[in-house]
Length: 118
Length: 109
Image (cartoon, rainbow over all chains, first blue to last red; front, side, top):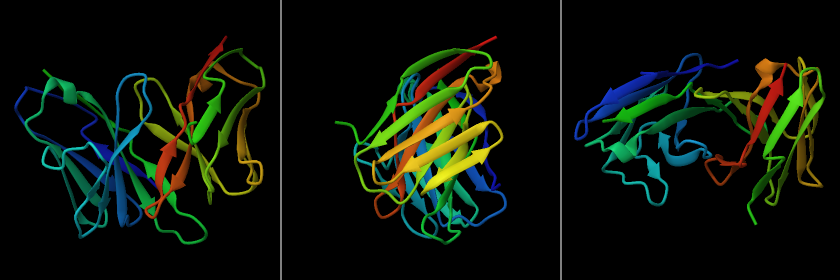
C-alpha cells in the first residue's frame, strides 16, 4: 500500500525555538495532506488541510502564524511550529490523500512525530 | 450526540478470543476508515470500506450503510493486537476525517 513518511520521528526543542516537521508521500502524489495533533489519551484533532500550491486551510482555534504549513510539491508538506512552548508538546501526525479515483479517496497516515518542548 | 460513537471504549480479552468493536455514526458517508494506533506509535490504516465486508488476515470489517453502523472483528486475538482502534469518516468537501473516540483493546496472554 501507499507509504507516508514523517521526519523527524521525535524531536526535543527548547522553548522559543522553531521546529519543522516533514511529511512525504513516497509512492503517490498527494494534492491534499492533513495535519493532526494528538494529546495523551485523546483523539486526533485536525489542525489544518494542506493543499499543494495554495494556502493551507486551518481549523478553528489553530493559529496559522504559529503553525506554518507549506505544501510546495505533490509529495511534501511541512509543518513548522514557531516559537514553541511546552504546551505545544504533542504527537503530530500527517496523512496524505491519494486521489485514486472511484467513489472515495484513500488517506494514508504517517508514523507521527513526537514533539517535546522543554 | 457525537457524530461518531464507538463501543466499547475499553476491552480486555484473553488470547484467542473473537473480538468485535462497533462504530455508529449519524452523518451520511461515502466510506469509513478503521485505524489502528499502538501505544506511542503512529496510525495504521486497516480498512477503508463503503459497503459489505472486507477481510485482511484475522481482521474483518463490515459496514451497513442503511443502519449507519460498522464493525471491526478480530479472530483468534493475540497480545500484539493490543492497540487503540479508531473508526473515522471522511466528511466535507476535502474529505477531512471525523474520528470516533477509539476503543482501547488489551489482549492478555
